[in-house]
Amino acid sequence: MPELFQEMYCGPNVQNLIESDDCKVMRLSDNSGEGMMTLYHVFPGVFLMYNDWHTWR
Image (cartoon, one colour):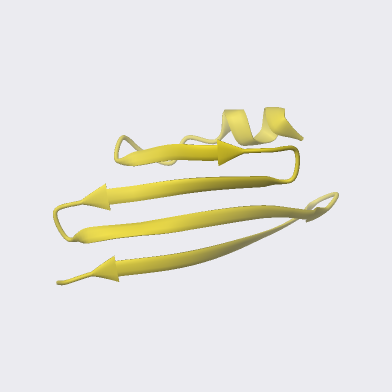
């Protein structure tokens, strides 16, 4: 599973914070605010992403 997470490219303003076999946490930040994206590997072929955004535009 980690190889799938490592192949993901979300853009230059996304920072990988933590990664395990079944979860990856990323932080997005730009001039409009910031947010956290948490990606879970639920079971083979299924992922769940939770987004928590704090923007002011």
